[in-house]
Image (cartoon, rainbow, N blue to C red):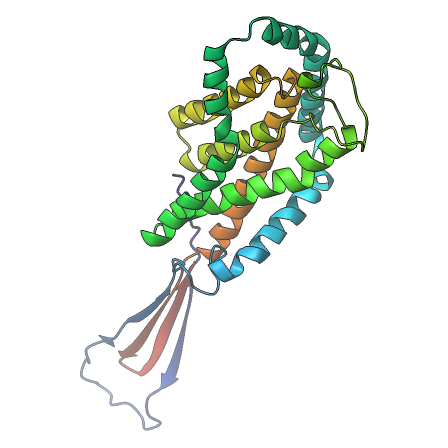
Length: 298
């Protein structure tokens, strides 16, 4: 778990007032300095407080903010971001040209009952069970009052929904690619005619789950395990002749991109809400006057 550093700024002021208009004695007796200090601390953020972005009543707004952040992301990209996006497109295109036909042929010629059973079991991780995992994670965070677990569940559900609604489903409809099981070849496209092979929705879902878990856990072994399982989902869909290899590569890139973007943006919102602010108030009484000191740290 990453720990957010909190910058501290102290602002302090002292006002001194005359204690009495009467002239002070020539040799005043020393008086002890009296100081009373009181402090008020606001934060860190309490779960389910009105400013908590993960509060149940705030979730619709959080998801809408995530959607807006994703839609407008290209406007904020710099040169390196565009190069990475270009590399992703090139990877998908290269896979389509070099691997789609050969892998589809291999799977067709080497299909057997054993691999079919395994593939059917593995591909479920990109279906309804992934939604149950996300929902269960959220509920566990609520029940055990763990904001990090709750945030992981929220980010997973948001990532899955947005990746499908904003990118995967529109691409499926727009490209209209036939599935391998149709036997029409790797380059049969009929835009807006009902075929939905590109990209793989199961793979998108699996990589959405993997990327969010990886970002929140921030542990190499968790990342390897998460992405490894997600990759197996993609291979299972190829084995089932539901997708070409480029379909699963595209789905993996979409799920990963959306997952990383959602987590990064939502964590920044949580960091703002979790900023700790403290005030300290110290009345001061000393020879010749009195006053107070006020300090604020955030």
